[in-house]
Length: 315
Image (cartoon, rainbow, N blue to C red; front, side):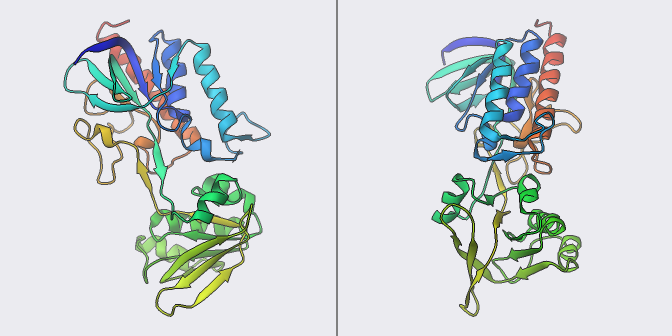
């Protein structure tokens, strides 16, 4: 393969982790190159209001916030490029990435910040209202606050869904938990937490047929798969908690990951088992998945990369 360019540090993916890594790496004179990826700015580009990131006292929209991050990274001469990494080769001491199925670049260090993508039911109404910012969300911790004192529905049966349902129950008047099968997938402890919360109503053997409303969520049409009975739930918010898919498929031949695809790092660091390859953000985080934690691990990745290069005598 012909290598078009060599760099000290290449950042794969953008979003809070990638941009924070870029800010730190650029200020450490690593002259990072960022390949922004399929969704420049990451999951926050789908987020209307961000009220929980420190420093934005009035709140901000996800896309505007990511533009701020990008400007800050570029201010320190990060080379931000559109395009996405289609293949990697981490077999040698110098790591290689292919961009847009074409050019190969090499680097002494790689920071992965490819993030994860929320899974959706795939209903036309769900995706349309989500894109309008009208009350469809995949993050109760991010958006639950907007439904204080209101009724909401959440779809899912695992630990995350149970945890988010109980979180919403503290804020909302009523939470409908829509479970496709006749049982939970969540751990016993999480199940007990749900069943002991009086304002959560669990609807087992129930499928979501439609999210009602033109611009905003006005209700959800559900159907019991045993009785075929349909019911309309009057809700103002619709949360989907059926899991996330980490965007890590291209790394599977080189990096350790769990059964879902989250990249494994040395605990307390951003280091993978491959020297010189680091991870920040949701590609390795299935627990917190917040913009602020992604930014924190992006900082860790840049600091780990800087120390790795210093130990190698690369300045």
